[in-house]
Length: 334
Ligand SMILES: [Ca+2]
Ligand SMILES: [Ca+2]
Ligand SMILES: [Ca+2]
Image 1 (cartoon, rainbow, N blue to C red):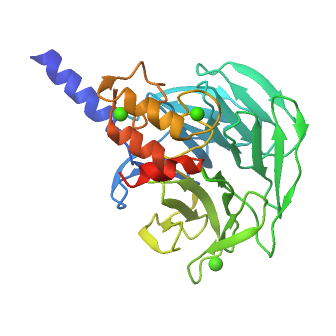
Image 2: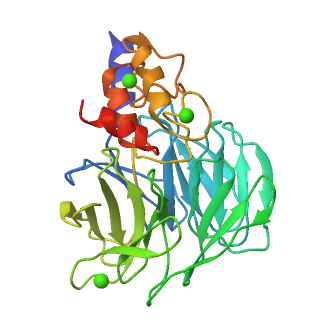
């Protein structure tokens, strides 16, 4: 009776569930807006100090966002209830998860910090180096990062050795980036969005006339599209990677300092790599198919791509989309 009513009231006050495909838009005014993929505003997460930037979900659906102005990572549960802050260096801007369920933060004030799932600092690397936007390679070691300049840097957080620098052609400022499962990467570069091959050569650009502030970059779960947004224009756009066509768009009407999509592809998060060889190929797809219609072993089961608790052919199909080996091609027709 009254108990049920109270619980319902609390649920309403605390917010709505954040489902797969939710689009999370970080603003410059201490909030993160939860939109549907078609641009309907569902709810607004509050409590930040100012500029909210990179964000990501863990395997349980908890939401983490870098509070650039507050020098913390803010964690919310899957119903948008604020849980806690983790101190993350000065001006933390970007965050990704690795296959072990640890989160890694890049901070403009310097450094790459790796934390346990519970928020305990494990290590800090290159503390004196500006790190804006990061992504983690499937090898679980190589961080790619930008510094709002013309380069993409690489750093191995296990061997503590810097990799070769990729220099971007043309003008602009490199912001958010995502490694592509098939090799190469996408980077939001201000004037446009660039696709580079694995050797770092420019092979494609994405743009809309009049938009020269592309800042965010995230891969959609569908394996064929990505999301970007303009930092001051507030334009949120989803592009087809092959054709360059815009397939979704909405305008946030405010500064956008980061975007994430629940369920997005991240090559460093370990999904689909069932045999733990740091690549996704037909061997992994075979293992997923062999376990289909069985319950997942837990929220981090690499076979349960969509994290719905059951291993199905849908998970196999999703993993096929991010295959990094030619052997998957024959499965894609199924
Ligand atoms: Ca442009
Ligand atoms: Ca594998
Ligand atoms: Ca599943």
